[in-house]
Length: 107
Image 1 (cartoon, rainbow, N blue to C red):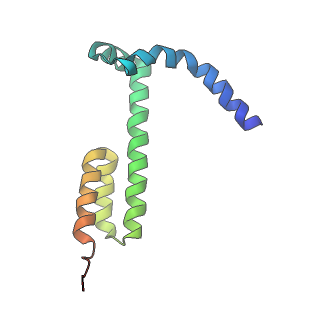
Image 2: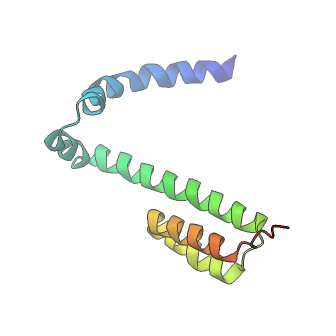
């Protein structure tokens, strides 16, 4: 019960922010988005989003590379790019995975 009450408190505390940001998602306009991202809280929110995405994708890339027994040194380079430039690192991983995956033999 205590676990669900914390979610209720967070929902109540976050409601004003949701109401403020909702118009940006319904009808996004560049000046408003620039205004929010130009603020300290907007920049922090964007930065947290970038970090979460980098970590989520990097974790998936790492676990998938272990499952496919990919070269550790190649993966170190790819994970660096995933952490620094997530889309580039992810694309590099997909290319490397396709290149190192054994080809299926059809009888």
